[in-house]
Length: 423
Image 1 (tube, rainbow, N blue to C red):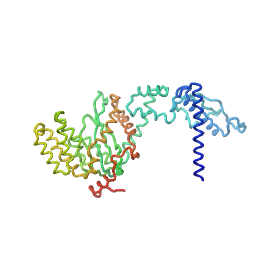
Image 2: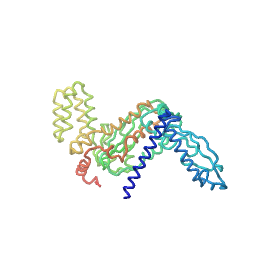
Image 3: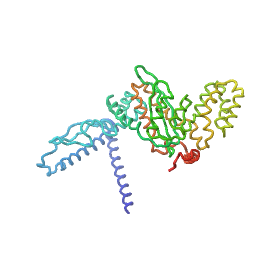
Image 4: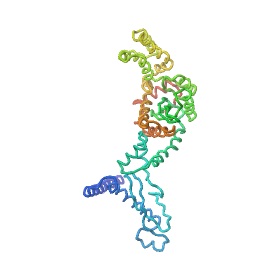
C-alpha cells in the first residue's frame, strides 16, 4: 500500500508541475515574453523562487512570519529590501534581498558578496575545456544568457580548478594495472618565446577494464626517455607497484626506462606506430601492396611465422626497393615480438595506443583554438578540464576498453600467473 500511495503521490506531483508549466507558457505566449533575458519566462521564475526562498530564510532568522504579531517587541524586524544582481543558469537576475534592522541577516541561498550562484560556474568550465578563449566564452554567454561576464570572472572560475588539478596529479593509484598506455602530445607555450613542448600522458586500464587518465606532465623541448623516466617514477611513487603490459611508441631509450621502473613489465611497441613509421619510408602508390605484407607480420599466429613473413617481405621486390622499411621492423623486433605471444583476447586490447591517441585527439582539439598558452599551468588547466569532461572512472560503459574484458582478464591472469588478483 505504501508503494501505491507513493506512486500516486508522484503522479499527482508530476501533474501539478505540468499544470504550472502550462500556465506559465500560456502567460508567456499571451504577453509575448522571451524565454531568457530581462523579463524572460525563466528569468522571472528564477527571481520568484529565489526571492521566496530569501523571504523564508528571513522568517527563520527572525522567528516569525511577515505580518505575524509575534514579531512585535522581538528586538528585530524586517527593514525593506536591497537590490542585488546575481548570475544564474537562467542569466542575470536582479533580486530584492530582504534586510533586518539589526543588520545580522546572513542569507544562505544568496550569500553576501556572492555575484553568481552555484551552477553558473558549470556553464563556464565546459566551454573552457573545449578550448574556447576567454573572449569566445564572453560572447557565448552574452548570446545565450544575455549576460556580460568580465574576463577576471572567467579567470577566477577556471583558476578554481587548480587545487583540484594538484589533488588529481597526486592522488594514490592502484598497486597493479593490467595495461598502461603512454604517449605525448605537443602544445605551444610561451616561455620568453612561443615554443612547442611535449605533454606526457599516461592512461591506465584497471582490473574492471575501465580506462583512467593517470596524469599529465609538461616537459621541456623535445620528447625524451629521461623525462619519461621521471614520469614513470612518479607513477610508481603514487602507488603503482607492477604493470603487466606498457604500450608505447618506438622512442629510443623508453623500453629501458619502463623496465627500470617496473622490472616485470612487458614493453609492447604500438603496432600502429610501427606500421606508420615503416610506411613513411615508402611511396604512397605502393602502400596497397605493402599493407598485406605488413599485416602478415603483425597478424602472424606465432613469432616464427612473423619472422618468415618479414623475411619474405625483405626478399620481395618491395623489400629490395625499400630496405629502410625492413630495417625499421628489425630494429623494433625485441619490443614487437611480445605481442605475438599474447592470446587473441589480449592482442585485441594492446594492439595499439589508439585508445590514448583518441584521448590525445580530443586534447589537441581543446588546445588548437588557443594558439598558444601564456604558461605551463594555463596549458595544464585546459588539458585537465578536457580530461575531466571525457573521462569518468566510474562510468563503466563509456570508459570500457574491450567488449569482452572478463575474457581478456582471465587470459591476463593465466599469462601473467599470480601477478593479478581477480576480485
